[in-house]
Length: 197
Image (cartoon, rainbow, N blue to C red; front, side, top):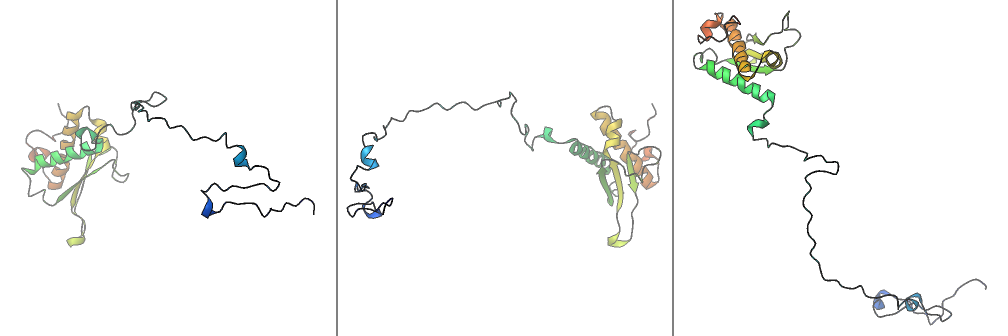
């Protein structure tokens, strides 16, 4: 039998029961095992005292020199409001201004804000607002509705004061159409009379 290796009966192999007892493998020909040959090179790792390392400061910029990313304003800050939110507030302010005088007439009117008028509503010029009469009967019917279009009004406004005036003018014109009266009757303070100077 040439070429086959047979374990000698004197070989000791480590088992889980004697794993820590120093038992080791012994070669068949009596040479020292690998653990015995390199035992002088294996040493216990040195224990260094724990050195407190300084924590590096938090980086204010990334590796390309860009600044902090993310939201700069929390959602509850007034500057966080979008243009749409601010426009909605202007519509509510205008309705509140008119509600003092016309509360019974406005009780069943629904106000809405849309970005742009639908194609079916536009004639020759782009409207700033649109009055939709009540449709249907009973509970299934739709209430009277005044829709204010945000983008056309913002396009015509010069500044924030002008924007508030245009919103109020548009609502007054649609209320006058709804009630069948002159805009001067709706708001005698001079709003909604047109653009004559």
